[in-house]
Length: 207
Image (cartoon, rainbow, N blue to C red):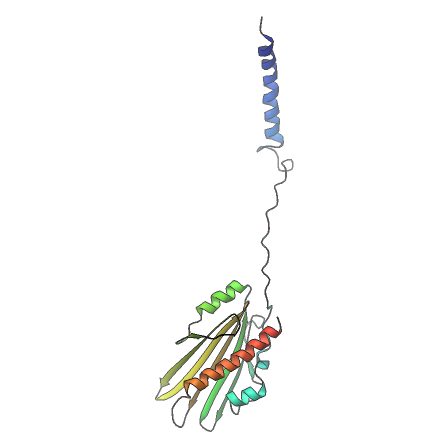
């Protein structure tokens, strides 16, 4: 005569097999999609908060007194350069020839989708003999270059500064067509830095 435990185990085994099969076809890996338990939703990345959603009006960055000093003879209103995407980048320029002295100044604002993208773009800007500028946005660099073409010298100073997800770029250059010499390095540096600080002030005012 079979013992009771063996008989009971024999009777319960098919039940266990059917129960396991039922789980596989209803809740397990073979269950239809409309029966399987819903998977936990994946966390969505949080959008980075940015300080600036569009560039400011660039011709308003430099006041008339500064324009008169940096670009003698230029119209204070400046001229905005038409670009393909003004919601991302805007540039204004001032230029004039007074007697034999020529000066050019432009201010450019560029807004990026993220601060990381702006920081990467800032690092890629190559300047001649760069040096850091303190107290201008989160990071700023100035470079000055002297070039000579057909015995005519031109000196150009460029400042690139970053605040959050935006870049400010100021270019200031000049030459003397009578002496064929370029303005002094210190004058161009000081002019570019002054314009950059004014432009940065306008940018941060809209944050």
